[in-house]
Picture (tube, rainbow, N blue to C red):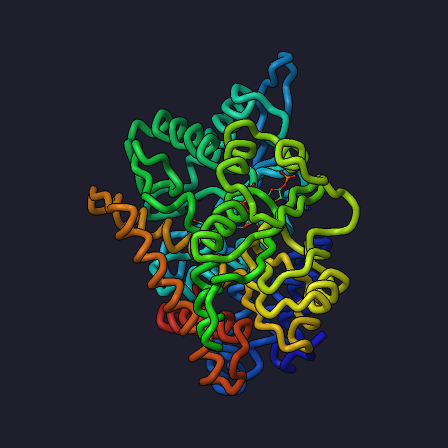
Length: 447
Ligand code: NDP
Ligand code: 2IT
């Protein structure tokens, strides 16, 4: 572990003591703090105003019961969360995650990351996150609908276009957002498009929002490669996961000439040397709600459940599944296989030990806060379109996404230069994200 600046040690200790058992939240805070020493030295006014203590304590945390009735007529009870972390730069903004392992520590790590990610985009967005320990896997559409309606019956009191604007994340896609928006509209009797992003194209959604996180991650990789006069043509790429982010990262990488040779789900992975069949993957995952084992069978390939997708050698790795999926062992395997660029499509998929392995090996590493910001960037574009009652073309929206990802890339590097850590995307993203929020907090006084 990198030592913390003395002014940050007591703040970090307080975070761990006040939030016991929330290891992912501790990890996300530590990762930001480890890069902030040069900021604390250059700007003692931030520490004097306790900006970090304040940022680590969410403005508001909502935990609620979500009762619903399953297809067998049994009452089920889940737990819902919305953590409204920071509204300094705009309404709380961040996704909802439905996954059985969601607990307060998951939502807090994601919400904390979101503050800096959203700030880094340069857009008027605060930071928040929510979700539930509900597992949509294996549930019928009717069960998912009843769950979403119950979830929104509580959540609707806390959100709004100027207050808090949720979107999708793991386990929350077009189907869930439809049920959530429908229930919000019914409860409030308002067609308030700006209350959720990721909406369907016929009811206020934006072109490219579905593709945005994966496409954006690949645009970020393009900028990383361009620094050494390379592009994606002919690069061997591996993604993990096979959900929204993974599929669209793979699609864009292949459109730009790469060969994406492997992807995974929690049951295992598939190596497809010819390059992933994106249409088949979309059909299996989005229409049939199937598994990578189905993809393997239909393509006549092996489905591998031992080891990890990171055992597959590649030039570019884009982890798009879940937090801490790529540890020291997997990082060493990637380095041995010749990886030169790693960009996080998921939130915090690489452990701190893995990041150290990449750094020591000279692998260019982009953190999720920067590389996966395309989702929230396009959510902000959706909010702009909703506010002006307009809708833009796919090409225009995609170009806005692409140019914003390039700006984020350049902002990371220029900030890293300003603070004498050249080439360090992690420090650049954290410092650029942090200082914009901190300056606004100083302007607002103690609130
Ligand atoms: P999805 O639910 O669409 O897909 C998640 C994928 O990851 C599934 O294929 C899932 O497999 C897989 N997965 C989950 N856990 C594991 C595991 N332990 N091992 C292997 N595979 C696993 O989610 P998204 O694609 O939307 O999100 C993926 C990541 O990207 C998350 O970290 C999310 O926070 C982040 N992200 C998402 C954004 C968005 O706009 N959607 C924006 C920015 C970041 P299985 O089906 O077996 O569970
Ligand atoms: O992690 C993320 O940035 C998201 N899940 C997207 C958030 C959003 O509000 O679009």
